[in-house]
Length: 261
Figure 1 (cartoon, rainbow, N blue to C red):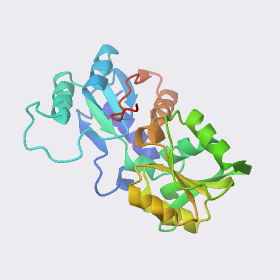
Figure 2 (cartoon, helix red, strand yellow; figure 1 turned 90 degrees about the vertical axis):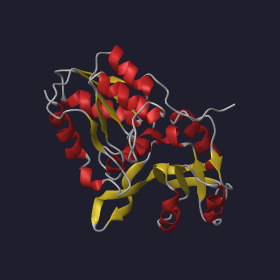
Figure 3 (tube, rainbow, N blue to C red; figure 1 turned 90 degrees about the horizontal axis):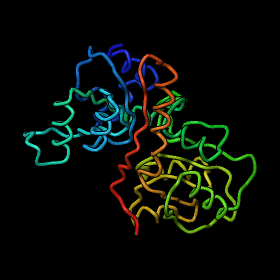
Figure 4 (cartoon, rainbow, N blue to C red; figure 1 turned 45 degrees about the vertical axis):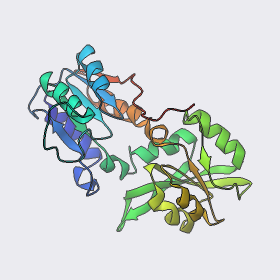
């Protein structure tokens, strides 16, 4: 089976045209006609992940984040991106990224995965694209019954396996309607407020952005890696259930560049 058959399947779920203008999803390295020997799923593509693929005899890495975002003028191994690209090319490993296009779909999307993990029901796109109710940014859902705010934060640490949660003032003793955006989601704060969310779960919030809660919503930042790490499981499930003629693996490498003390 060729690489292009895998990428065509993934793009039937998250069409490449749904990626944001700044993004670089798609086949970054590799020949679309290359025969697949095995696939490794990861959040990030690093040298360590590429070595893991080599050890597992996988010649395709499907990651959420693209290893290559910006144009390179030189590839001499002086930067971590260059080192990873050189290693992949030398070992004939295809690198495919499915990033904001996977963020922007409801079904089998990054935010649906988060919402399911924390137990939300009645999911809908938080900020639909035009009139397309299944495409857009973020997800909105709810619990069957209101949950004590601190109990929810406690469960969040367990279900999302996060070390810490940065949050705004707990202005509501109970939460039921929850907005979700994996990764950097500050651009959706006002949308979450306007849709009546009690709490907005996201990542990468800056100091001044916490003030935008404006005593109307609880903002909860669990970290970028933490919010999207289960995308690896999502990709593994999509690929392994569809294709049985090659092995699919989840990376065991923790690629989170942020450490906690």
